[in-house]
Amino acid sequence: MDLLLLFTPLIITILLSIKFIIYPYKKSITIKLLGVFFMFFSIALFAILFQYTRTINTSLNNYFFILELMFYPVMLSLPSLVFFYIISLTDYVSNYNSIWKILPHFYIPIQSLLFNSYPYINSSNKNLEIIQHLDYTNFFSLKVIFIILNVIYLIKSLSIYKKHRLKVAQVLSYDKGIRMNWIYLFIMGYLLFILCFFILSPNSSPYVVYIPLLLLITYLFYQRNNQNILSLENTSKENETIFKSSNTEFNLLSEKLIQYMTNEKPFLKKDLTLYELAKMLKTNSSYLSTTINSVFNNSFVSFINNYRINYAKKLLTNSNYKEYTIEAISEEVGFNSKSAFNRAFKKNTSITPSEYRKRNN
Image (cartoon, rainbow, N blue to C red):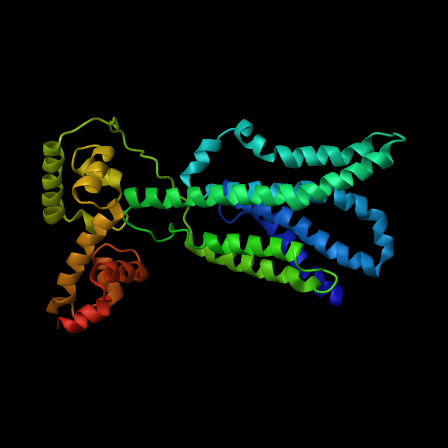
């Protein structure tokens, strides 16, 4: 029974990896990458459990070389896999559109696999000496190179994540399903696994494998229900040439923009994008984005949300809308979720929509 409980996390991760690789609920490279991550994660979990169970059953020591052969390349691949999974959720993944741009990131794991395979492929009297040298190399790889790779790739991942958030704010007028705040939960689970592996002894507490697994499972279900994978590329056929413009030209466009926002109310469209608004104004998106940033000192999403909030204020104090719930008001003014409406409203007014309604009725 104890062994069953001990190996349950391993069974779960194997099943998840098969599910995501072979039968993904969304046919995308992102889900398959998550499946590969869970497959490699299961091998790492198996290493922890094997280390514990071989103290109970010494006959397992005869098979330790198989685990060693797989373990080091797998561990050294995890930082790169985490990086590629995170960027696959952004449109920065287009920078890695060929195998030759991806392979260099797995050079060290591939090298580790080749080095560890050599003694078993080559029959030589020096094999014992080679294996001893490999032990030192593997120890250095796990204790030093693995840590360095994690630092490098996690910093790169978080940097791209922040750039993606800024780009989203400049292009989209909504953030439901694309905020990616939950990515911190995934990274936390991964870091917790590393800490459990390096700090806690599996001989004294083998059930530590449950801790990172629970965090990753929590992330998995939260992410599945809340994240949309999107492209921020402009698909409309417009001239995106960047050109110099005078302040007068920017001011003219800003006046045209204000007039259009007031009369046509495009902000009521829940999934409004910068590209769509530029098309409505018969200008290009780069020019419009520069105008919003420089003249109004706002990002696109903040600019649109300001109009939505001002319109919401009118509805919240309008007797014709007194029976409307806060959620219904949020939908009327163009927000696609009550939480996004509350967050934007409080940022704009320092109070919640409910408080604003009470104070003004």
